Every structure is written in structure tokens, then in C-alpha cells.
Length: 77
View 1 (cartoon, rainbow, N blue to C red):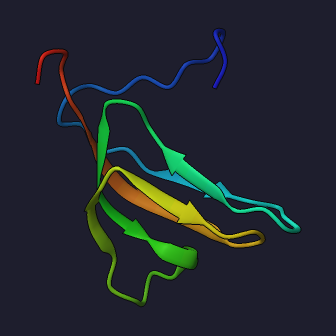
View 2 (view 1 turned 120 degrees about the vertical axis):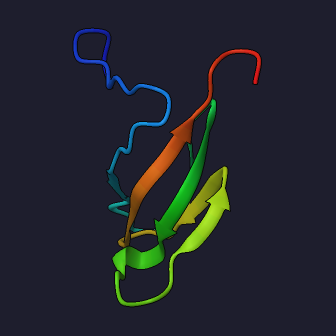
């Protein structure tokens, strides 16, 4: 995300994110400030049940994570 092309979402709007760590050795803990992930598919698997209602998720090196949606909260919530 940059100042020129910020991602914009309205409260209650569904957004899909894809994130991966190229590796080779260090994982990443992905977190969006002010958001709670409704569903996250760990390791990019859409056949396994998603993890639900989390604020951050560990992304191992060389593996993707996808989020079907997350909730953005208004200031003061």
C-alpha cells in the first residue's frame, strides 16, 4: 500500500486479501490495524475449514494466506 494507491473499504464491505512470504527462513505475522479477520485460509487451502475471528495470523515462509473478508471498524468502536 502506498500514499498514491491506498486500499479503501467501507464499514461492512467485504474485502479479499492475498499475502505470501517468499522466505526462505523468516515467517511474518500479518495484522491490519483496526480490523478483525472474519475468515482466513491458512496455507492458501480453501478445502480446509477457515480460521475465524482473528486479529493477526502467522504466515510461514514460502506459503500463502488468503482472507475472504475482514471487518473494518469505525473510530471509537
